[in-house]
Length: 116
Image 1 (cartoon, rainbow, N blue to C red):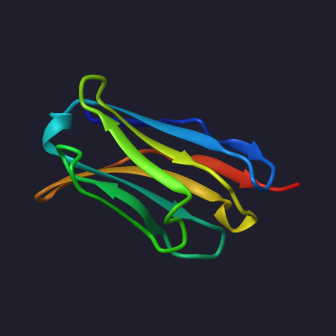
Image 2 (tube, rainbow, N blue to C red; image 1 turned 30 degrees about the vertical axis):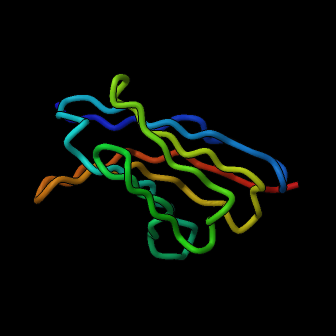
């Protein structure tokens, strides 16, 4: 069955870095655009970063441009989110998403907490 399993979240001090990973299985990963979303308490889920199926196109939320980098390894069926210069407002549950046409899959999320 389809699985998206996020890892790499945790507690980090402001200014620190984390690298999130999302391991995919159960579908043809290379054919899917991949994204990272996040949801903070009391707020709506928002798109953080997205990458096309081949990796040539990437886009970012304005709030993370220059600090976060999305990448993918199609040989490993994995998408990454490198997060640098983290701020307290980056605190949220981060979700991995795969989409192709009407197919739309989500992971269970990983908590990122930025606090001193």
